[in-house]
Length: 92
Image 1 (cartoon, rainbow, N blue to C red):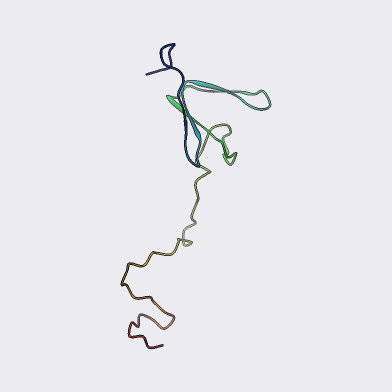
Image 2: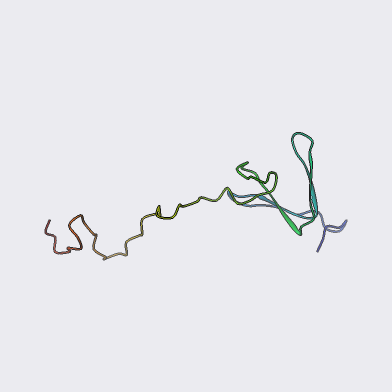
């Protein structure tokens, strides 16, 4: 439902993310520039990492480069792989 006198504009604070504002919306930048969004919901950047300021482009998300994946979590009881291969008999 769009904004109306019976229902105020809704702004949602996203943890570690943008402000979500029910649109359409106009944003006045710190230099006085007027930005307009006709979308149903506008995501306004709060971290200033975006390339499309003031709109969020998800630059706040933590990126992992291909080949730089985080280490896989070992399941309980799964043997550790050492430098010598897959030995699980305790020998070095």
